[in-house]
Every structure is written in C-alpha cells, then in structure tokens.
Length: 140
Image (tube, rainbow, N blue to C red; front, side):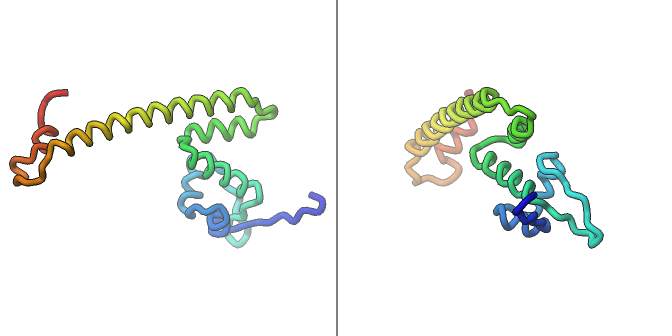
C-alpha cells in the first residue's frame, strides 16, 4: 500500500481502540464474525486495520439491535463481490419491523405492570399483597 503505514495491533490494543473487551473479540472470533489472525513468532496475534474496521462494524450493528446471526449476514453482504444495497435495505426494514413489534410488546407489558401497581396500596403484609395474588392466578 503506497503511503499507508500498516498498523498491527495486539488483541488488547484492538479491543481498546474499538471500545470492547478482549473476551468480546475472542467471542466474535469463535463465532466466525472476526477472522482470527495467525500468531507471530512471539506467540501474539497481530490484528490489522481490517480487523479494526470489521470490529467497529460488528459493534455498531450490535448497538443498532442486530443479533449476531444478523451481523453475520450483514458482514457477508459487505464482503460480497458486488454488495447488493437492496438486500441490505431489506434487512434494515426487517429490523425496523422487529423493533416496532418489541416496542408494542414493551408498551403492553408496561400497561399491565401499571395496572398491577395501581391495585396495590402498599399497606398489607406480603401474605395479602394483591400484586402477588394476581401473579399467582391461573388465568391467562
């Protein structure tokens, strides 16, 4: 590479640079999301700038709510000879729908918890707690 200095990082430096833990890097290697570099004569692995980019990609995708399986699919699309934007866009649309469903579920759960909370006057013993009694009922 002309004019570019190729940096090599140990696993600790790679993890610090990207803001993840060393065990996270190792986990992503075991899962096949991050290529495991060969060991040098010293026994240390030397990670390249590509590893930094890949790890940042993984971290950012995880921050956006993608599962590791979904991250693997995105990585495969990124590495494809001719990345297909429609495929990536479709995955994003699917994730948006998934998040919408989770938000609806969380709102439903919140409403149910607020209802339970409103039924309790916090004055009895645990033996007569209306919240615990409702949670114990066999009704769906």
